[in-house]
Image (cartoon, rainbow over all chains, first blue to last red; front, side, top):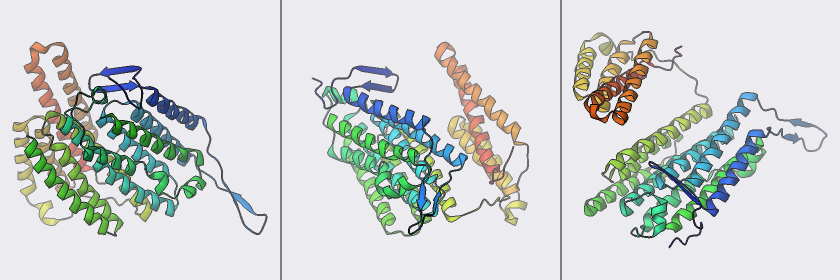
Length: 219
Length: 201
């Protein structure tokens, strides 16, 4: 009966409205997010070296402690939000965690106090804010059309078919929230001071893309 | 029900399309942000169309996420444009500062809010106090208000414990929760009215 890309759930936790489950697929993604969060916690910021062309001169970029702390905090929050999005079994909670990933990604990018980075962060933030609309609207249409937000119930196949528009809106929302690494010129971001934390942007958006594929294929 | 829902969602979709069209045409950064706030209402409309208790439970987190992103973006906008913090001391409009109208309006709103009670009543009464505070450039020790807010919140939680453990006293719990949330929302909103970007400690 349960025949899914994610595999049979190993474990289902139902605590009131909260619904968490682990399948081979989601547990892999969860462990990936956990590993990278631990790496972010223990890692130190890199100091980039700018080399002046045509000479021997080079200079290192300095990162102030408050800036580094803020970015690390945002990166950890981003990791936690990704972990939540990986294991939740409730479509609305998935939308919330995805929106949180979007906010923390904006935070990671915006921590750099450089005008063009701030500009990119603002533009990306506008996209992320616009993406919350299809995201939450998609979840609401799910609830309206099939009368449930539970992915476990979706798996059983007893519910009516999910309308295509709901799936489309959910996917568009996730694309908008997770587009940080594509939008804010990736190479520029990785060269910006405080490099290791920026990796969380890429990782979290990759993870939410992978998860939304599973969700869309459930119903 | 499905028919009504389809009509409703059609109207909301048209509203969203109009708002997104405006967003695509807009070039000013700040105006884009304001338009996005408008578009957000369409998303809340889609959720509200569920028309059940579930919708009410889903709107609140949706709204919170929207406001959080809006705050983050406005902060980035201020940093990006190099806008400094400028403390504002009340509304410097002579008519509002001198006349009795704000007082009368706020007394009316607070009374009406107390009759309503609960969350809505708290919002209405708080609005009344906000009007009074912003019109009078009021200076007061805010610690007392904050303490009242905390105590009323505790009362609210206590009422929930009565609901859970002593369900036969539900009426006492109901009254406690209603009064607690009324005071809490009122105080929280009036604190909003006194904060004009100054640092209180």
